[in-house]
Image (cartoon, rainbow, N blue to C red; front, side, top):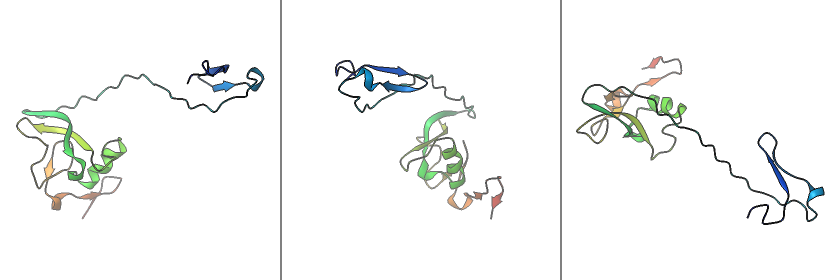
Amino acid sequence: ESPEVLGQRIVCDPEKGLKCRVSENPQGCLDYEVRFLCDCEITTPTIECPPAMTYRQCAMPCERVCMYYTSVLQASGICLTSDACAPGCVEENRNSACPPGFFLTNNDRCVTAVECRCRLPNGQVLQ
């Protein structure tokens, strides 16, 4: 219920938060749960795909993305859960970026499991 309905006098200050003065509330201050709405415009970066391919937000299940590329995606807030999808370019007649048995290694390249290489944070490929 709102503070007004409960007879509470409070002040909401964006810089200092919710203030309830005991001197203004003879029954004391209640413990409030506050929810904020940030109405921000979300912009999706424009990705250029090769001809005959379309960009999709869910191009490949994250479980079929090479581990190095998964870490790159996770650093961007993508593939944080096991059932998540990686975005990428998909051929117009396909359901996913890579055929069965292949893994996504970057935005639009598919490789076999053996070809999925590990990389150090500096980009050096480990053999």
